Amino acid sequence: MGQPVREYLLTLCVTVAVTYLLTGPVRKFAIAVGAMPEIRARDVHREPTPRLGGIAMFGGLCAGLLVADHLQNLNGVFELSNEPRALLSGAALIWLVGVLDDKFELDALIKLGAQMISAGVMCMQGLTILWIPVPGVGSVSLTPWQGNLLTVALVVITINAVNFVDGLDGLAAGMVCIATCAFFLYAYRIWFGYGIEAAAPATLFAAILMGMCLGFLPHNMHPARIFMGDSGSMLIGLVLAAAAISITGQVDPDAMALFAGGERNATHAMLPVFIPLILPLTIIAIPMADLVLAVVRRTWKGQSPFAADRGHLHHRLLELGHSHSRAVLIMYFWSGLIAFGAVAYSVHSTSMWIVLAIAGLSAVGLLLLLLPRFTPRTPQWAERLVPPRYRHAERAAEAALLDASAVEPEPVRPIAAGVAGVNGATAVGPRSRFPDRRKAESSR
Image (cartoon, rainbow, N blue to C red; front, side, top):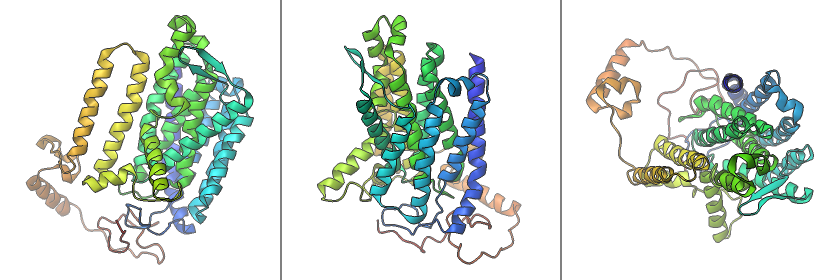
């Protein structure tokens, strides 16, 4: 059991390292080519910030697949299945369209068509849904047309759900990473626990997706130095959908009948996770809920479903009085609660403690929502480990004076024309600690 875990850990670490190291040069490239759109009314950030972070994430994806192809236990995924190649083909196409959109702002219908074509490319290479587990019936085989249509629908829904939630610094990458971690535990249990080789590609996709998000997050946390853009949000949405399609459409519940007491019982045992994989309602429940509410809200107002606005869930959290970081952490909490709760329930669906724990944590989450202005304070011994806003006022002021006296002021460096005002730092200069927020005011 240890050897596959070590190989997955190595793949994860390589993906994290490549994504993290590529993000810095990609940021400078984005500034050089002018991939920094103007501040829009719905935006939360106040300064132009470079996009194209998806370029680094795609590099991490390629590195992860390349490393896995040369590992002893993971090499069989490439030899016995064409799914990794199908994923890479679809990801390359959607990534290229995303890069063009980050630079030239493509029409929404063009992006929708590209999403459908990318899903079709994966279907043509075998990454499609072949059957669906139905409670009380068992596995239902699908015709090629039915499987392809369902696959395209799942890919488009997942991509747009992730894209819609990408509105705060670190939000989309963090939520997808949390959900994918829960998904990895489930997929690894199906593959290694039950010995079902068909679940191996989904397990690999989940490990690589975690690495892509973890490698990008240090650059994307508030205040973000770079955004992933559509090239990143559509890419991670497609990888998440591909993992869901792989384990839903390729793993036959009949293979688990010996362990669950029959085909119907096996389907019932896998139901808590099969439902979100067929229609992503728990693995990406928060983005999915945001997507549905956005479509209903815009349609009710007579607008296009693709028209941007400031009515997303993260915007509502900011309007309640939550800070940027607190809103992101609350969204993390709900994403982890739903994703890990679904996986835990799929393992022990008869345990009442799972239901009680989920209910208790939900109550804690609701309490956090109702206390937007509550700022937790840490013990004195731990105050140096947390940001100043979580320290006591007197000790925080003393620490600031000590830090100011211990560090010599840096010499002022000239900033090249054309790159001033970039959020976080310029392409070559130091990071600004006190950005001028009067340069670009939003209308919120």
